[in-house]
Length: 202
View 1 (tube, rainbow, N blue to C red):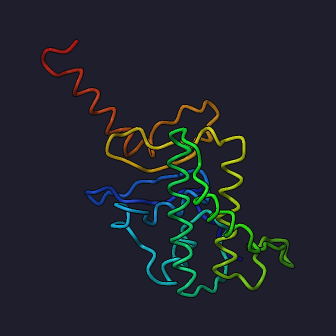
View 2 (cartoon, rainbow, N blue to C red):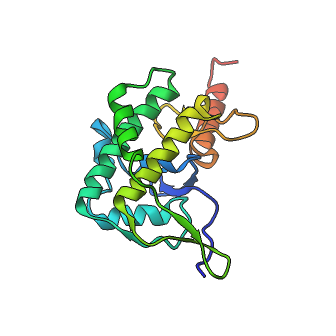
């Protein structure tokens, strides 16, 4: 039996190379950390099938998934991710969702998703035949659940001026502002403290 994954979230690196934990709160939002449209293409990490498989291994999907991915699936993953990225930004800023991006998500979701199963020993496993198309369907369906569910109004962009990470606030009070307290939260607190201590303030 595979050892359980750690708590949900991804380990990202600051510009200085320091690791920190970021939990975007949903599978579909984890995909957004792999790159994006326009200026975000500089951060692209999905180039080969192995890259998509690697992302799955770091994602919140349960372990043990034996995935068959082709190069065409990588292209489709990038197309879905870019549409999701723009949909999420629009949702975070209260703008209407654009039909062309919605259509991309709906098309991916229309495919058959990954199938879980109960193993003979009572543990959770995956049914055979896990493909890139099934993976993307699962991600797209997760996005539909997010954008039409109870947390749809809690999709947010990090409050730091120089951070564009997107997340859904699933906390009970609903007051999350930062991608991660240990990263942007602490930086903003330190910046506010310096501003208060500056001559001529207060």
